[in-house]
Image 1 (cartoon, rainbow, N blue to C red):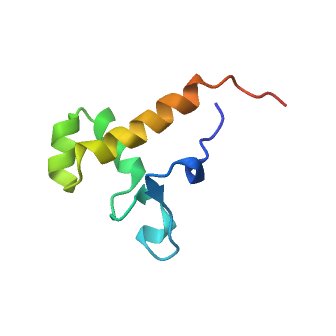
Image 2 (spheres, one colour):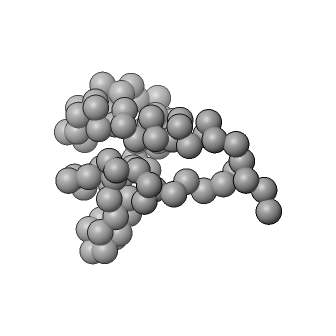
Length: 77
């Protein structure tokens, strides 16, 4: 599977020195990776927003980006 180009997602940012340069929800310190780890662990969207003090809209924007990225035909070689 191809790696996502997070620089194309307007709802996230990576700033050197901020959370070790990880991709985070814009204006927060919540790593994008934490969304997927917590969904995998069984947390609901509501639980994630409560635990990390982010909005449902912020999390949904990242999920929409991933979904749209997966809709594109894969580029081989």
